[in-house]
Image (tube, rainbow, N blue to C red; front, side, top):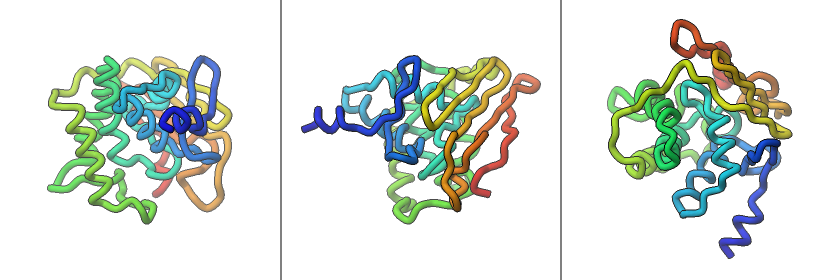
Length: 207
């Protein structure tokens, strides 16, 4: 049964051995993150999905920048776990630093940076519990070097394109959905390297 479920997971394939796993046809990126990390946790890592996850991560650690569960904290915590296990301390550090700096503080944990536009099923106890769970799995450790002068990887699928250079990073969604900013088409996340630090030049989609 597990093998049939694994083989039947909906995927978007791209050149270079990458695949996105999720809920078609929208393929929200948070679902890709959680499925990819869960498969590694189960001892069945999907290499094409992990390669895609590395490319989808923005230089500041954001990965769920399109779709349901937009920019949720659990996707950052899941990345900390996966990239530590995969031997990628740079990307683990980017996710951990972003989570600690922008989501945690004042005695509470935000679901996303603006605590807005959450689906009805995204109840705070469950989703903050998921964040805590992945951080527990990741274990203790000080953030490593996020290597701000290092761009991301290239990715191209029928729905998402990520373009990257050492000083720019741009994520494009090729098809949108009316009435929901989380599914807007076009350049949805862009970051540039200035003065040794990455700066986001695109507005938050849900504000």
